[in-house]
Length: 181
Image 1: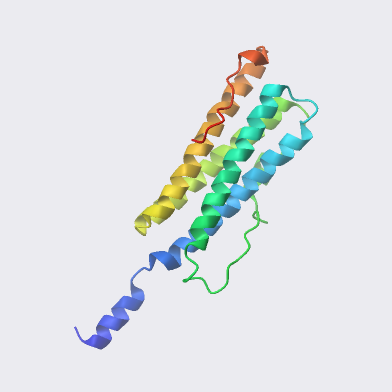
Image 2: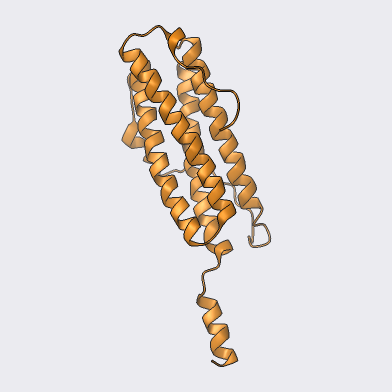
């Protein structure tokens, strides 16, 4: 193989830095989107929710904020590759419309949030597969952390919904753990 052919072949080789950034940016946008919906629910239910539910929503919010920071830091670690750092906002083309709820019932709102979390986990597994195929293990670790946080959120939301359906005393519901995942 000549030197020229080697240079051309290198141009077609996948560059993990080049391909990982859009995956991480999409993951960050999805995380910001989900966090915005948790925050909106938290604000709307502030007066009506019991202490356990408020604590749950606060914990969910804190977990998502930590994941956003993780993704932002990882994206910034690629700074030499980036031409200009971009500001990532929640997706304007959000899939959240699939889970819209106009009801004021806390259980129905938690059910919509549960659907949003399930969608987030599915999207995150797609991101994880792409990053692993690029051999970007550090970025994949960040997505695994977000998946673990979302799965923890799924479990808690489902337990709270079941408790509400059974009209269980909220004092019997599990407390959100204050430590990280």
